[in-house]
Image (tube, rainbow over all chains, first blue to last red; front, side):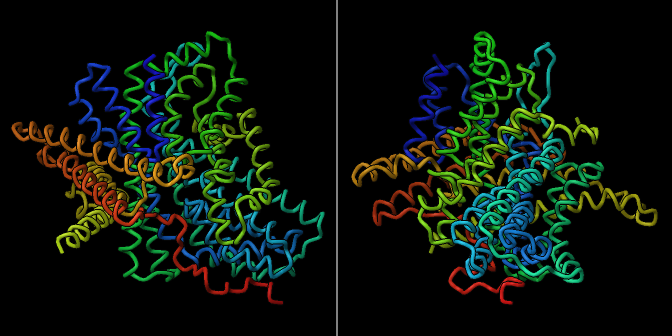
Amino acid sequence: MSSAFIFGLLIVFMLTGMPISIALGLTVLTFIFTMTEIPTESVALKLFTGIDNFEIMAIPFFILAGNFLTHGGVARRMINFATSMVGHWYGGLGLAGVMACALFAAISGSSPATVIAIGSIMLPAMVAQGFPKRFGAGVITTSGALGILIPPSIVMVIYCVATGGSIALDPSGHRVSSASVGQMFMAGVIPGLMLATLLGVTTFYRAWKNDYPRLPKATFAERVTAFRKCVWGLLLIVIVLGGIYAGLFTPTEAAAVSAVYAFVIAVFVYRDMSLKDVPKVLLGSANMSAMILYIITNAVLFSFLMANENIPQQITSWITSIGVNWVVFLLIVNIVLLAAGNFMEASSIVLIMAPILFPVAVSLGIHPVHLGILMVVNMEVGMCHPPVGLNLYVASGIAKMGITELTVAVWPWLMTMLIFLVMVTYIPEISLWLPRMLGML
Amino acid sequence: MFMKILDRLEEILIATLMALATVIIFIAVAHRYLLGVSWLYPILFPINLSWAQELCIFMFVWVAKFGAAYGVRTGIHVGVDVVVNQLKPPWRNIVITFGLLCGAFFTFVIGTMGAKFVYGLMYTDQVTPDLEIPSWFVYLCIPLGSYLMCFRFLQVAYSYWRTGELPHHDASHVEGIDLDEPPPVVRGVAQ
C-alpha cells in the first residue's frame, strides 16, 4: 500500500516536469509528514550525510577531468589517429568515426559532447567524401554513447554509490556486498571494446555492401605521428585504470589525479586552452557536479524511505514467491529500464532503480557487477532512441536532420546495440571475466 | 547591483572550492608517494595530511548545495518534460509554474529544517573528527544553500511569468568547435 503511494506520488511529481531531484525530495517530505513517525531531524541529517562519503567525490573529479579534455582540439587529434588506423578499410571515415567516438567519449565522459565534437568534424567530411548523410549521423549518434560504458564512467560510480548501503542476501542467505568502483571499471573494459567492435562491424558491413569510399592507406610514420599527438589524452584512461588496479590510489584519488593531469595536458601540453579559460571549466564542472550530487542527496533520502518501509524486501519476496527465475527477471529489468530510458536521463534512472533492483537481483544469484554493466548498457541504448535520446537531439542539430529521419538512420546501429544488450544480459562472463582474471572479484 | 554581487559570489565560491578540493587531494596523494623518497622524508614526514579527505568532502558538499542553487539559474536541473511539452499554453504555463513553486517550497522546507538543526548544534561543542572545526559551521551549507536555491526558484518563476522564458542549459557546447564555421578538412579527404 505504502509502496504504491510512494511511487504514485513520485510519478505524479515527475510528470509535472519539475527537476527529478525535487520530485524525489518532495515525495519523501510528503510521505514523512503524512504517513510515518520518522523524526524530521533524521531527514535533515541525511541531507548532509547522504553525500558525506569520499567515494562519491570521484564524480566531481571525473567531471572536471573530462571537461578539461572536452575540446575540439582533442577531438581532432583522436579523429586523425583513428583515420590513420582504420581509414583505408571499407567504411573508412565511418569506422574512424566509431573509433574516434570511443576514444573521445572515454576521456570526456559526456555523450552529447562527444556527438558534437566528433560529429561536427566527421559528418561534413563524410558527406564531402560521398557518404550519405544518414549513414554518418547513424554512426556518430550511437558511437557517441560509448562513453558511459568505457571507463572511467560516471554512471558506473553512480551505480556503486546507489547500491552502496543496500543489504542484499544471495540465494543461500549470505550477505553480498555491492560492486566497487574498481570492479565496475575493469568490468566495463571488455563490454566497451566489444560494443565498439560490433558497431564497427555494422558500419563495415553496410559500407562494404553499398561500396562507400575508402581513404588511401596511411603510412606507418603518419600513424606514429597521429598516435603521439593523441596519446596524452589516452593516458588518462591508463592512469585511472592502472592506478586503481595496481593499488596506487583509491578510485576517488585516481579521479583527482586525472583531473590535475587533464589540466596539465590541456593547458601546457596541448595548449587548447589558456589559463584564463580555467575558471570557466571549473564553474561548468561545479555546475554539473552539483546537479548530480543534488540528485544523489535526494535519491539517498528516497532510498532511505524505501528501506524504512521495507520495499526492496517486499519486492524480493514477491518476486521469489511467484517463482520468477533470473532469466525472466533480467528480461523484465531490461524492459523496465528501456521504458524508463524514454523519460529520464541515465544518472536519475540508475539512482532510483538500482537500490530497488539490486537486492532482488542478488537474491536470484545475479552478480552485482553483472547487474551494473547491464544497467549501463541499457542507459546507452536509451540515449539513442526517441523521445528523450539526448544524442539523437544533439545529432539532429549538427546533421540538420529531423528526429524521425534520424531515428530511421540510427536503426541498424541501434539493433546492434540491442543484440549486444541481450548478450550482456545472458552471458555474465562478458562482464565478469576480466575482473575475475585480475583477481578483483 | 546586489543581484550581480550575489551571482558573482556564488560563482566564485563554487569554482574556487572545486579547484581547491582537487589540489588538496592531489597534494595528499603526491605527499604519500614522495614520503617514499629518502631525502624528502625528513621534510615531508612532519606534515600531516590526514584531514585532506574530510576537507574535500566538506568542500564538495558545499559545492553541491550552492552549485545546486547556481544550477537553477542555469537551468541544469532537468526533469521529465515529455508530458509537459504536449500540453497547450494555458495548462503548460500552469504546470511549469507549479513545478517551479514546488521547487521553491521544497528548498524552503529543507532550508528551515537545516536551520533548526544548525541552531541546535550551535549550543553543543560538537566538532568534526579530523579537522576539529565546529560542526554547526560545516552544516551551515544546508540552510544557506537551500534558501539561496529557494530564492533562485522564485527568481526563475518570476522571470517565467514575465517573459515566458526558462533558463536552458546547453549540454552540447564544446569549446574549440564552431558549428557555423566550415569544418577543417580531415586528413586524406581533400586528396
